[in-house]
Amino acid sequence: EAQVTQNPRYLITVTGKKLTVTCSQNMNHEYMSWYRQDPGLGLRQIYYSMNVEVTDKGDVPEGYKVSRKEKRNFPLILESPSPNQTSLYFCASSSPQEREGYEQFFGPGTRLTVL
Amino acid sequence: AQKVTQAQTEISVVEKEDVTLDCVYETRDTTYYLFWYKQPPSGELVFLIRRNSFDEQNEISGRYSWNFQKSTSSFNFTITASQVVDSAVYFCALSEARGSTLGRLYFGRGTQLTVWP
Image 1 (cartoon, rainbow over the protein chains, first blue to last red):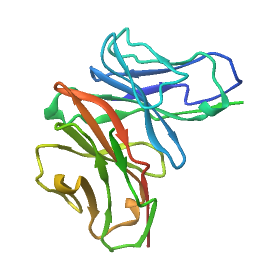
Image 2: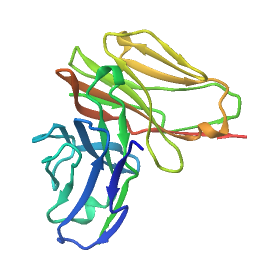
Image 3: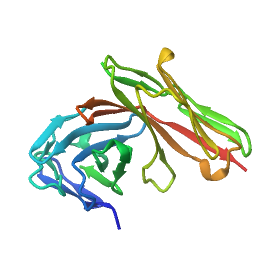
């Protein structure tokens, strides 16, 4: 089954404790992306990757890091989480082929709370 | 700068009414892509449609239709004969083109549509 998986789905942590949210896709997509969703603000892109070893900043990259060492994985790293990073996070992947519509497939989301 | 505005924060309609969700965008790019996504109460994000900047044809898919007008920088979404299952948050999004692939994506803040029985 074609899917994007994220782990963990829920996480409660404390300020300053490094964490990683994993994202994996099995569709051989080149484009992957991370978003955060906050009430009243919609979805905001954090980072995106057009291919292995190619990443770029989105709208709200501060406080986040990413890496793309393999095509299927795109982890999101919070080196020193702060309470303002409490949010719902979505990972997505997309085919680069225009004939496939550039449809983004989203993971189920990770709800992160930073105390 | 790129920007997507969904001015309607919340819309409520009664079943079988038609409803239009507005989306206005700003971009300096000549090539770009526009999208609509749906987020039902269960929380997942579902792709609905993509439009290229050079393709202004309107699209109809069942009860859904989309009106893309470059002259007004709008990409509006109409649901005909709405149903309770259409209740969701709807997001409009804009992507710059990076060669033949997507670049950065910009989402609007979403419109919460509630359809009452």
